[in-house]
Image (cartoon, rainbow, N blue to C red; front, side):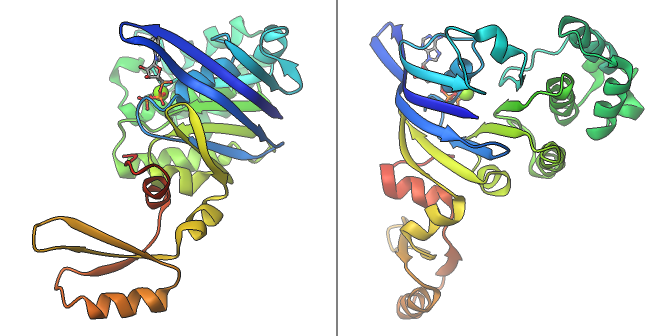
Length: 282
Ligand SMILES: Nc1ncnc2c1ncn2[C@@H]1O[C@H](COP(=O)(O)OP(=O)(O)OP(=O)(O)O)[C@@H](O)[C@H]1O
Ligand SMILES: [Mg+2]
């Protein structure tokens, strides 16, 4: 559904050129939920902007649904839905009015029915006639999702869908996102939340300074660094982590540490990122 080949975008800044996305190559299959995981400034939004035709690549190729972002942007726009990182709802209008305007601009057929269906999908039907200003952050994110789904896109792009939401509200949004898979839609999500990538994505590409440093299922990525982490605070107050292949080795290590703060836990994608880059994501 998506093919990136050496995709590159360079920004000219005050301190010289920044290769925001630097030779990104990957493919996303039909009805796959694919995640781009990386810290602030990794290039996630820049990559999404190119895939959604909002920004032109400086080099490389990007196909969405078989169409080229540079040569056939209109064809792509007809087939995608986007939840941008920056909330761009009309805040003075109601939920329903926001969707009505979008439906008109995108010539959505059977708009009234589709609006109801999507407001119900994100549990906002009861609030359909309330203005967006009175909505919580989580409700606004859900409304953005409903809007992105209105024209029945075959690919859905979500740029940091749960940014700024507290953990419980984030889970409600994840449920709404999971429901979008039902009709076999391809979903691309960017996030810097480890848990979000693990909870939603079939495969995850880990991005650091515009480059892909790993690409696999969350399970395989974690297995590649080891199954368990032994953690404790040492005499100098520093966090020490030992990664082990299996639970048995980890338990033996923990028992040998004679340190009251020692814990054993499963590895997560943050451990993968640290191992590959020496830096932290969250
Ligand atoms: N319009 C722009 N002009 C100049 N530099 C930019 C522009 N947009 C992004 N950059 C730079 O490109 C790099 C990647 O930014 P980008 O917004 O794609 O990262 P991100 O992974 O989405 O980060 P975040 O998690 O903070 O959203 C950063 O170094 C950023 O400063
Ligand atoms: Mg971003």
